[in-house]
Length: 69
Image (cartoon, rainbow, N blue to C red; front, side):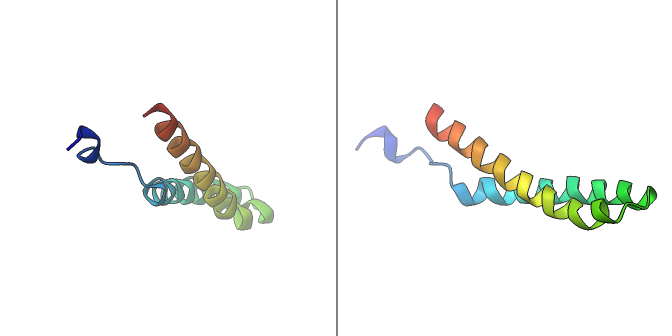
């Protein structure tokens, strides 16, 4: 048996979920800032852009880890 079988391989789903969680956290903070400034677009679009940014960040981190290993 080779040592490669014992090594855990990263899963894309895990990186995506963590990215989405932190993206929604940042997006909700941006939405709260939009509420204090009474800017409707930022209030509504903040979580959506946070989710999108989190997914992209999760994919990029996954690709960097897979390429590195």
